Amino acid sequence: MSENAKVVAIIATRFRADLLLRLFESLPRQTLRLAAMVVTDNGPDPATLALALKSPLPLELLSPKKNLGYGGGLALAGQRALEKFPDLTHLLVLDDDVILSPGDVENLTRSMDQHQAGTVAPFLTNPSGILQEVPEPILWSLARSLRKAGQNLEKARALAPSAYPMAWCVGPCLLIRKDAWLRAGPPRSDMLAYGDDVEFSLRLSAVAPAWAEPGVTVIHAPPEDNPNLDTDLAAHYRKFGMLLQNLAFTCVISPRARHLPFYLPGNARRFFRTFGLSAQTILEVARRYSLGLLGIPAGR
Image 1 (cartoon, rainbow, N blue to C red):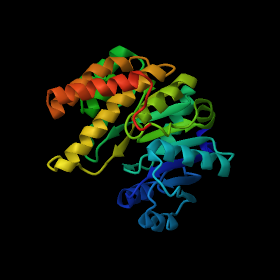
Image 2: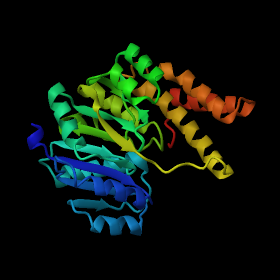
Image 3: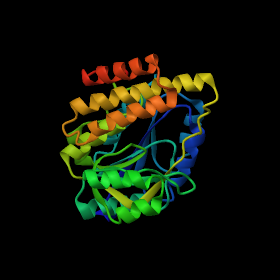
């Protein structure tokens, strides 16, 4: 089936044309040619429009004239992809800051066929090959072992030499079969930043088998943060809090949260290590987790 796959990439972006250029340059080199791209510009950004006009692949650029957020932008792009290309077989969710190697899409579709999966996710590395993220296994013992392997790609691959059933993943690169997307529904538009990808992938794994493919490593290269600026630290504080709230929210609304609740204490500890242990930070963690457990996502 991989030879007959019709894959449409969907992307949400906002004022990051420089990063989008790297992605666009990697997509035409795929050994399995993409049928098209659908990009939601959450700006709008003239530089993104100029880049889209030069795309060597068929491209639909959507400009909602306001920031829909990552999930809302992907939902809009997915809807247009299904309307514009009704014979598509797969949707390829891509962050604007990933870079694909030529065989990545073909190898993901082959893994999907081999395991009869509805969703497949790769391992993520930085440009130097240092492991960033692995999809969370359903098997708790493997999940703990992969955590201990840290950023060592070879150790992680030795623990998982072949594809394994996935509970959830972060969202820079995700191949989704059309019927799985339709059954799970699109990404949520009311989870503003951070955690919406985990919630979406949990829904996908609940409606059809989801697999992680260690044989595919996709480069994830976001811009570096500047932690020395007070404004950046304040923004990070807010975004980290939103992540805590959305993870707690996902624990209570997901049809199959699996062992996600086990990570809530660890994320609280990371928050305290980052911002210090004080009455303010304790209250912030309590507030965020309480709102999430009450069924209120960050962004509503």
